[in-house]
Image (tube, rainbow, N blue to C red; front, side):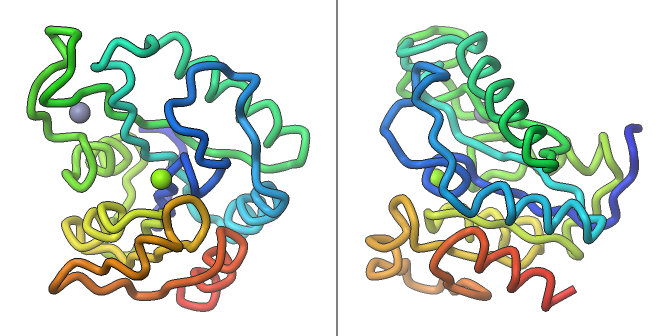
Length: 191
Ligand SMILES: [Mg+2]
Ligand SMILES: [Zn+2]
């Protein structure tokens, strides 16, 4: 097991950490929000594990490869490091039931809101989901929080603004906030 974290913050990528640009197929298109590095650094300093959890069905659809996603994440890691911040692990689901890449075209246990990516952080870092948080711009991110017993925060960046007005019956966020820095503040006030 790597450095242990009791508490984790599971961050959606597109629309939450970086600008939502549709299928992100080139590292040069990575654009952090102006507050992203500060928000993540604050979580690091509080001793929380910070994990990226992202659905990347573009791989199953044949739009780009794992290697491209890895390059995107390396670019993010470099930009974060330059600002004294760190994402402890980058987890993504490459699957989609209607994908065109045969071995990835399936129902899996890691496409959010399924819990597979969180389970990996549990196994690798000892994270306790019941003491953890999920932040994202879609209700499926809040759904993931519910599934694993974490607190769920919806941000209004990316699709969040639209999502806020289309809350699925029976699904409630623990907080709805403007952006990742507000989510980070909310989390630090609720641990
Ligand atoms: Mg998103
Ligand atoms: Zn998957």
